[in-house]
Image (cartoon, rainbow, N blue to C red; front, side, top):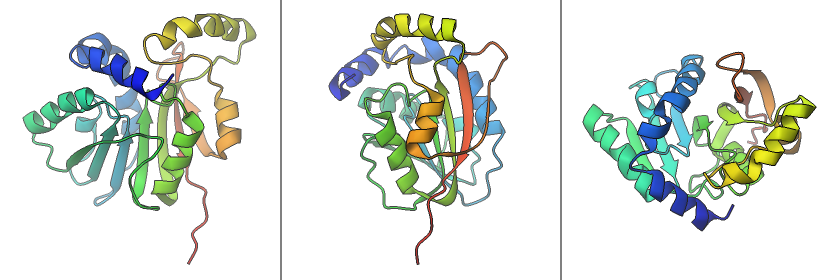
Length: 209
């Protein structure tokens, strides 16, 4: 899906996104981030922050930057920042395929429900790796195609339908890991029957002096 099409979809959803999706997506975000031991002073990047549902989940002693392609979604996120007094949060309009940050900036990069949305997921992972410090942590929440052949077939059939809502259903986790050389620590689901997975990985790029 092209970038402009994604912008249009999320502009249309921005005012009702929380009403439609909070109860569905937020529990996974909460589970994924509750399993991370953040330290004071950690720099965190939330890629595809959307309406900012994840922002209250970060400790106030961390420096959080949220980026999103949609200015309409960011406007909703800014309302949360202002209402909750999240002084440690900065929001920026930005394409995840071309992050405007120097190399080795962040300790953590979080991407929840976004990898299946962007037109170039491999490029996004590469950018995440670039801006994360060596040994830094990735937290990814995303739908990946089932390892069960019959379910994968159903998901592939439904893929054109879900793309109208802004995401794809045919992405393979194994392929993503092998292509991007992610060092995965663990994967798990919020519930046993969940179609989304939580992935914790390390940035295995080398540090050069």
